[in-house]
Amino acid sequence: MESLPLFGRRDAIGAFLSAFAVAALVREARGAPRAGRAAAWIDGQHDIAEALARGRISGLSWAREVERLAREVDVAELMAAIRSARVVPAGRGSHNDPAKRHVRFLGPDGEPRRLAYGAALFDFAPGNVITPHGHRHMVSAHMVVAGRFRVRNFDRVGDEEGAMLIRPTRDYRSRVGAVSTMCGERDNIHWFVPVGGPAATFDVVVSGLDAGAPDHLIQAIDPLRAERLGDGTLRAPIIGFAEAARRYTAGV
Image (cartoon, rainbow, N blue to C red; front, side, top):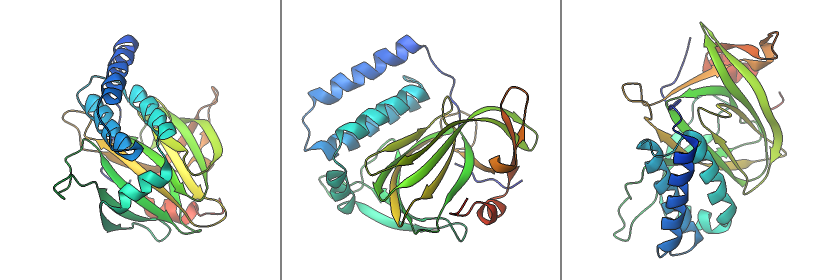
């Protein structure tokens, strides 16, 4: 079995506590001076990532706040802030992976800010694919900043030796400004394919969420060859990323 170290599930805290903590963060963010919507987005992502890492909110509350922030930011303004950041090529994995670039936002002194999340740009040529995979010890969000994508998600409902038990949740077309979120409680497995030409996403990741566990763990799966179980869930084999790249091309 081939896997990559990257993120997973945090025990959910009470719904009331999560809602209260998120509301407090929103009030705090709206009361602070901002230098535009992009700056508010950058700071807001830090606030909720820090709250998640400290156990003040659940992964699901984090995901909902990311989606709210996406509705409030202007993509052109955010991309201008990214162009002013320190952007470093990070290479790619298999032959059909998108090109990845790490993004470090800068402070007034021109030095990288210490934020509670990591950020990266993924540039997709028409044949590039993020193959279906599941996560542990992390959450992530993926905003479309160019082109269009077909996005497919699954809930991870259980684990067996060499397989994940999954349930399909979404299969849709995503355009510029839309954001797809992943956490332990919802849509833990995702799969991205560009539609009709080049495309790009800007991703936010919060990792190291489970004390005593690896910083993150990512495992490729094979949902199209999964065994359908009596309750409608699928038993999807865990496969290596090289095999996933061969099977899950842009035409699948």
